Length: 113
Length: 115
Image 1 (tube, rainbow over the protein chains, first blue to last red):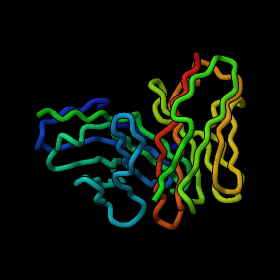
Image 2 (image 1 turned 60 degrees about the horizontal axis):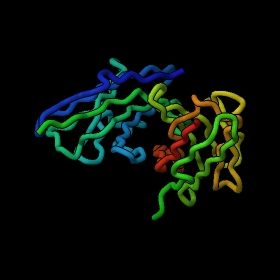
Image 3 (image 1 turned 90 degrees about the horizontal axis):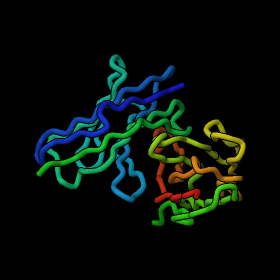
């Protein structure tokens, strides 16, 4: 069975600083990897995904993530944080792409002015 | 276009009662998923429907939980004899399931409170 570990339930950065949210996965087969964002009292929105091909993937709102097979990681980054980035971020994995997602516990991103 | 819709947005029920939660997926999406989000357990996969195939029920926590999808579109999640630990936000998602996409689009959820 697959699993996802997100390091840090809360991450605080200053506006304009680098955002780094960590995600490690375990999977017995090559995984499909996703990052979702959830704003307060809203549903989940897909930020970006890795399925096949290029290991550095770019998503919406200036976010990107790099799939590193040797490290079983899929960390999310953004060069410069904006106040509007404050939200809950979830990393997720699936083994067949179309099956149900296994989510990490989430990381609450706090942006300090 | 219209996204995934769920109803009701909030549901309060008494312990032991049955509840039905509804999901309307994005038109044309062949796959439909149910998840549960709670403070203690985070986001959990419950069940997955794909076309006319048998659903993947591997995430259902007990036999009190069931779901059906009628006509390949609308889905209903039923919880029988509700317990307090069933209190959570129930999320529905749908996907077109084309090669190399696998993007799931989520609805706003139904917040279930069992008293």
